[in-house]
Amino acid sequence: MELNKGKSLLAGAAVLFSGALLTACGQSTGASEKLVLNWMTSAEIITMDPSKATDATSFTQMENTMEGLYQLDKDNQAKEALATKAAQSKDGLTWTFDLRKDGKWSNGQAVTAKDFVYSWQRPVNPKTASQYSYIFSGIKNADAIVAGKKAPSSLGVKALGKYKLQVKLDHKLPYFKLLLAFPVFFPENQTAVEKYGSKFGTSSKTTVFNGPFV
Image (cartoon, rainbow, N blue to C red; front, side, top):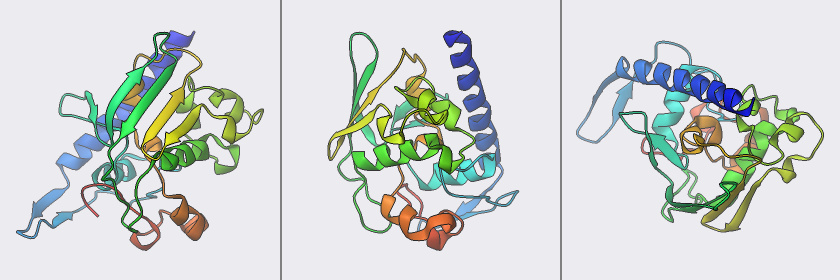
């Protein structure tokens, strides 16, 4: 059962990544000498909130303007983005990630391990009503949190320092690094989320970014 569920999650993520890639190929209109990229979308951007996005257009924009621990290369393989090193325990149930120390939010704040803890607790919280809460299945306590049986703070993710993140799993996830490239696993700036509330991610003025294009 766990293997089939895992394949289903991975397949769903792959379809969305593929859709975002195809959309991206048809949207770029060029760049100026000032490294300004003019980008057209074929559909409205619904939200730039990683915890609430569900469509390929929104995911594409987030992949261009935000970074998670990993990103997919041209061969759809996970490569390091904010993560610089990953260590896995012998039983495969604990992952430790070292983060880049130069990560910055567009509001000037540093991107830290606490941003990941906060952002991963948001979508599994039933109050957020994230349609992708299920994709956290396999991370310790995620299923119970989504079901309303445990508090979001019990999720198996912890900041061991400013730039070190620990993740505990309920069972092995061979495709874990691939999942971490999906936007719902991107970090979120707690200051901005709490400042803008329900308007967070609904416009460029109510969104903060940590990626190559802002």
